[in-house]
Image (cartoon, rainbow, N blue to C red):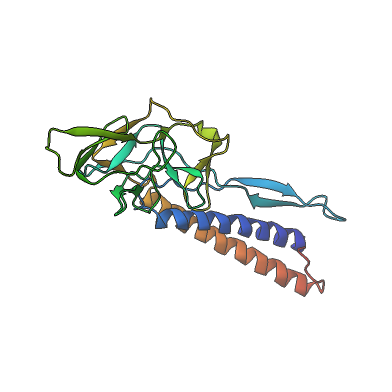
Length: 247
């Protein structure tokens, strides 16, 4: 019996630690623009081997991101954009592949490359990074069209320069990458003209700091209870003179 209690407690400890890790990461990104909360998915994993037929472990599967939109914050900055509803902004990841983000805090590098605040080049509708000429002013339309007045021209000489790659893959195929960006597991995403931007605004993290703190307190208490169960199982086994094996 002590082995069963100890095994159940250790299995619970493993699941609780994964849950706490996700909560801690979500809390750390409460102020990250466009962040989508982590939601670890747990799955029963039967153990194989002699004498293990009745034992089942609990393992955290891949992150199931919470893709709900975060609150929109108006900034008035002409290079800040928030995806209005469903959809993503296409960017170039550090490995050269197409990735997706909701971070619409954009800047123009000294080389003229339009990029997110974390340095990822924004892709144009042609799939290549958007490179802009020297500009006096620049504006972004709701459909992602980038226009501006070139250096040396008069304010009324507005030139259409590019269009941001906006896409809306099936939510079921969206997966979080190791670098914090997202990818379409169904293949390369394609532009979607239905995706609209809210210009002069940014989407905030969709995490709830208060709710996260309450969940973290609850899971910490659960962790302490499970630890006590393990100690109880060990002490019971020692008092009975039988070694406790949890493997």
